[in-house]
Length: 619
Image 1: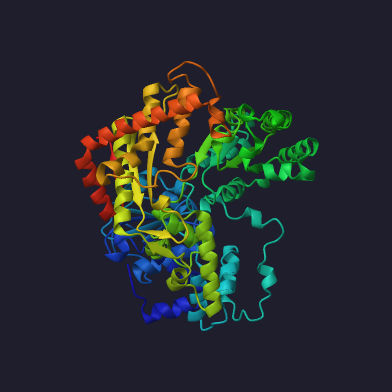
Image 2: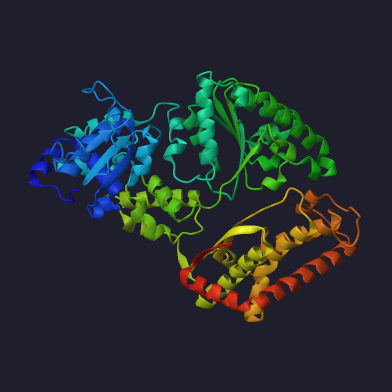
């Protein structure tokens, strides 16, 4: 591949902004590949938006052949192929021309979708890349090499949101000084059509369900299947700021459906939340969705609807009627063709089980904090792809606890900083608005590593976890608690009917961080408690369930519904004493286990101090 453009080629690019912009986009997509960096031979498959694909073909020819039309080799007639689309000059689709031969040079296959790439070619490809449309920076560059510099970043960001033909036209326009920018504003209702879920980074946990739903909706539209065969309900759970509302919007766009967004708070806020007006507001939202013949109804704060097992006596009539009516409305909604229901919550355990059963909100997806790759991709997306994910990684790798909402906020501040100085956004703008960080002392980092490794060792010893990942922070965001300095993630193999032994194993995992600190340092820190949801909070609640609800304590007496342990609950002195005994007994057992593994514990934590993250798998 040609890394430099000669004078003749450059002069041609100056007058063809579409080719130039896609040339930049193509280089951006390929810059990390060996085919680009080391000029290694191979088959490259690029997925590119159909509206840009022919411009991309011209750019790819330029990149591979230095503006020659073809190689002189015998094994390929062309250096660049387009799959699944018919060019204006061709009588047949170019996909018919595919002959997979291991090349002695480089060849690029372009397709608007990976589905249009033959399976054999996908397997033979050395590289498969996603070629994004031109960014705002590319539009600015196209104008400048064309000899005009009358475009600022904020206007360029509006331009790249337009269809491809408008982007090309504005990049080629002689002057933008007199441009009526109101024509770039989206028409009423258009904003809800973008972005689609396919365009958004992250959401990896939900993508398999979305892909199946999209296929089912397509088959339903073609009358291949009836609406009764489509999965219609999903619950999104996760910490605040993980993109649950944006997911619903993007899902509607992906399906080509309308979005009706509401929340339990909206229903209850209707005329002071009187029962009749609350039920009326609920019914109106569902009726609106049912009438569209293609709608996603999004209900936020679903946990606020209540749970009949947790109701206070003075709320039974109100909450019972609300939940009962909601169940009726869901059932009726799913009988209407084209209606999808998305619920969102930060507290899934507080939702009535009847709402979450099969046939209602039956798919449950947990949206966790984004990983290293996702953080960079999300920030790049919110910056309008002006900076690539690869460029942003050195900065986003420092934001391990950032939510997608945090990254969106960061992008807005960075763009504002760039506008203030009148320039194109760069890494310094992003770095300037990063949240203030306080360096954690090494002894604190070491303690956090010991704490998290204690959890991991006991989890592996339980036999109920196969893969465990740990990561710790070197810094903490000013004003946040040190409890967020480390995080262990594992997937428990939860049995359908857990036994006492299995529940106690979970309790020991919860207590293992504290136990590890005592084994190594001879004393414990506050890192396992202090807030709801902490290790100690979870262990205590589980102990109350064991002794007071499950009949797994000293007596078989049932004292409290298991769900009420998470609410206002005043245990008897006898139950309190028994729970204290359970926690003390399991803490001793956990400490004994870790004392035997002290050498391994110290070795693992020392490695974690250096690496800051690790992954453990059962052998």
